[in-house]
Length: 257
Image (cartoon, rainbow, N blue to C red):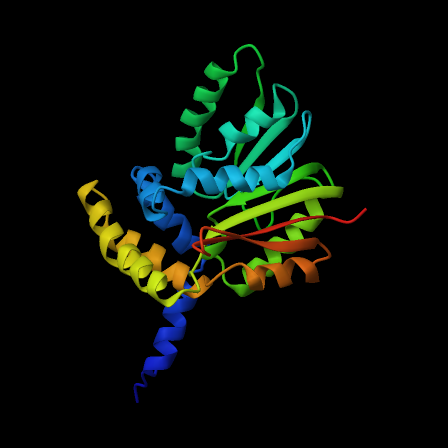
């Protein structure tokens, strides 16, 4: 006799699938050719500012070794390079091959713009949750807009990985698009994410269903509060941060000496 899954089981399985590494890799590989502009639009144009604030919170110093997790197309690197002033190193880690390939354009642009103060940047195809970065080898860990694609267990693994690779006294800074607490803003925000952004993605020759996932991930993520707890459980000394009425939230802190 054939049995079928209940509707709730199907929903649970579907929910688990969207956090699998294979699903997320495929999603971002497919979105890579339009993701840059859609990321800016999905944040109401604030993505650049929020990344800049994330970098400021990390207190990057000249000569630091920085690890940028879930680095995408290297959007954080220009700001990090300005802080490093030709000394130190940036290591970007992402498991989407297409995103890593796109990041080479960012790397080339930074190299041209910093010809007098060349900065070493390495883009690695690797898993941010279990990277090959040596223990206690980096001064700063950054991450922008990658947390929402992780489930609670994966965020715990990420927090432990950050603790592993940071030197004692090292700093970390994360930022993520979040659900604003104000009801009126939340309604407008999700209409924009769920209805407008997919249309923009389609107009740019992307798959609108892929961009609809950004709203689904954001809704499930909520804000960075649970990641704050995960980081503290992993041994990091962190505090939450909030940007533009809670439309983005962050986590900022250190690995204790």
